[in-house]
Length: 82
Image 1: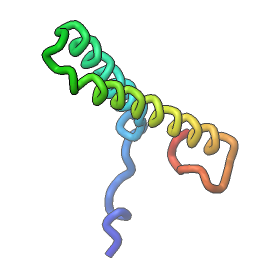
Image 2 (image 1 turned 90 degrees about the vertical axis):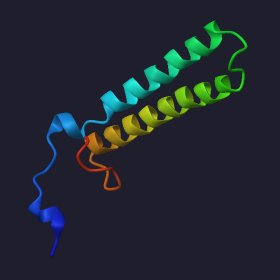
Image 3 (image 1 turned 30 degrees about the horizontal axis):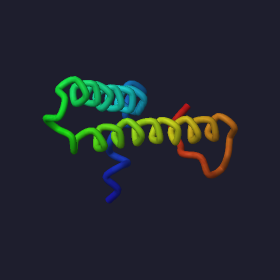
């Protein structure tokens, strides 16, 4: 039995990854500001926060590339991003 056939598809609002990408990246940016403002309390946390922001930008870039490919009609593009 195919369980995915029984479930209704996600609404566009729930399927859109942009809010999660933007909020996650902003949360890491706020963490960078907190680490810098508090001084030498968490010196090891700054590289982790920077990596979080970089990964957020990379994730959004990958999403944008996939969306552009889906709009172009590329066969290898992810489905459901339009």
